[in-house]
Length: 499
Image (tube, rainbow, N blue to C red; front, side, top):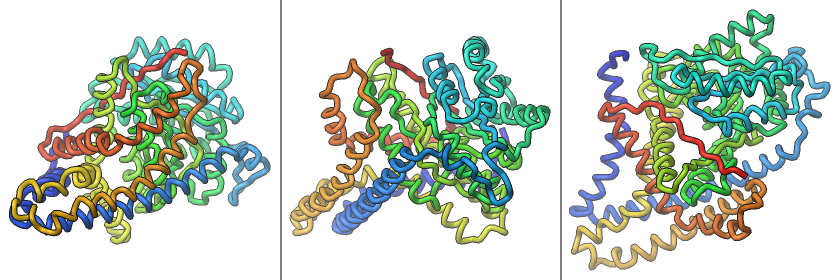
């Protein structure tokens, strides 16, 4: 492992330090300045109400755009379409790299089949399984079965096995993807294909594509004049198994999807997440994928941003890709896995030192642009770990720790004012219920009709689930980074209900 500078370690410590100060200081000031704490919490509640309504607006905007995209035949839009530099869809190839480790046939086959079913010429579709040496037997068995079944419907179907134990690598998706990506580049060159015309989609093993996804990405790719500095980011819906997932998993799944929908409607904030697409030329120029981080998807955004001197954008694709909600063999294992998944995602703050140091080095990028992006990363991770605690608990601290404050007018009116402000935030929650129901897949025959009412009732426990399965995992991730107790990549186990 590389030796880290003192400045790097300071930047690792800073987010966790600020978070813990944000959580501890209200306790201290509740003894000495209780009224100030109460006023601050009321202001925070008002801020959160405005923010909730603001995000609800963007959620509905994205919902409208997704529904429009789902009604659009992008294949027809591509017919006869030629870019300003003379490129057409007939020149393009789509390659999907499925990063897989210990995934079973129940996970990979539907994902591979979704590529086969794409409305795109079969001889311009390529599938790559990026697997691990420590999963060799399982990987090769699945690859053999899938290749025998589907190879004739593709330009090619291949597998690359990433060796275990390479020095300096984190055992995770990034290292396996980088290994496969480099070898796929050689394959493209040896087969006389133009890397500029090969669109690579890096996908989790449970990713199932909408049948128009390739057409939609190709259309956006051709429209972009600076296409080799653009990432094409679809919206993930964790709905493959949503009918069988327990309440907490459903809430976390919809919450993750809704956040990506909100960010898609604010493309100036959009960052790579999970499954996304770009040209093979761009992947090579930016050095493929990072091999020494846990969250390689968001790091790809920063790698591209600095590799191209700030000239990089994530372009929203309003067609969804479908993934699994967290579901294990039993309820408590599901809860554990949900927590661990959120902890890994929250560990994206690992990029903070890299982002800051690269910003200092790249003086050609405008300061305002760099600072804004750094602030969003920093503020977002602090809010992730603290907001739920502030909304649920901090407002009660002055009354608990200060007897004098309990007898003030502010203390008497505080619960009423706070409840009134936060009750308006349920407008945003009602919108979330509507959007979630509108994106539900068809109800399986073995699921009762009353499940619809259960899915509506789920949202009542949102405040509690946000604390336990969002803020706590984020707090642990920041604390681990602060103390140098680094996380490794954890693959969320998949469980499928047999129909």
